[in-house]
Length: 446
Image (cartoon, rainbow, N blue to C red; front, side, top):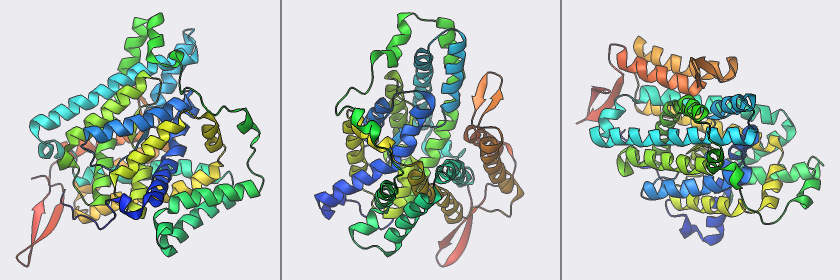
């Protein structure tokens, strides 16, 4: 991955403490909607999710030498696993909370799979391992991530299109026409302006806010993996682990795609320094820790990559500040309630921009690496990645069963893309470089 470092702000503290803090808040808002949606859908603790999104992000940064500007939030890839284990547990007479505790142990073992992949990369070298993940595979995967997420953005927008348009227009105007601090906080401005508009329109009911406490613990023992061992069902535990562990294949692929997207956005090859093995270990460790305490699996967040792309503020310290805010807010149920009252249309309007930015980064990767689409084998690989990811998402409720294992669209498309790229004969594509004034073509992956 040959990258030219982009011009951007690499030390946000030079902007002054007020702007630095606001930038951190912006990243907090960017991840908030999607991060809390996973526990809302599954029944896991929202406060615990916030706490371990923050802790997981800090762990990731420590493992990756404080270099990678990535935020870790709730992974959607495990939704099918949580849902199926919960349903099966309830059928066997368990409470939903206990069944989810079993699912969390399955996610813990999925997190350990990251260490296996990291070990292979460390042993054989990132170049050899990435022969299986060239731009021909990662580019369409990044595009697919944005497009798959776009459906949730549209669903949120349809709840109130005027509010969504206010958020969308505010982000665009602030980014294109704004100056100074306005230009680098368009996402936060979009959220605030749309939220205030909703309040003025009487679209927000604050009645539940008074009932929420100011300070509270993010989770209880019954919501952690410890509860499983009070009356352990070994057979059910093994079934859960077998069902959920393979999902790690997809999330590892997503991680590689996200690292490529962040590298492309910032202009630094994070796959080589601090190294893909380190970022994988950071992500896996964050997921393993979160799962033990009843929080969803973590993953590097495309929403925050979209913010990086939009603001050109590449300082990882801003992400760590957002992580600290998430940890603090996890102990404040009243704030969680206030954010939870944010209209879905506001989140949808902002997400349209962020998800679109993710797909745009994937397109840029294909262009910058000059992937040859005159080659039929390259067209087949890219086309199947896109059509499987999007088709399974919207045609099969993002859930394809192969035996006892459930695959999301992104998981299946990643497996198909990597496999086809490895087994189909022919060259992976062409990269054009200028050598002494002459164009030289190099076959990718040779």
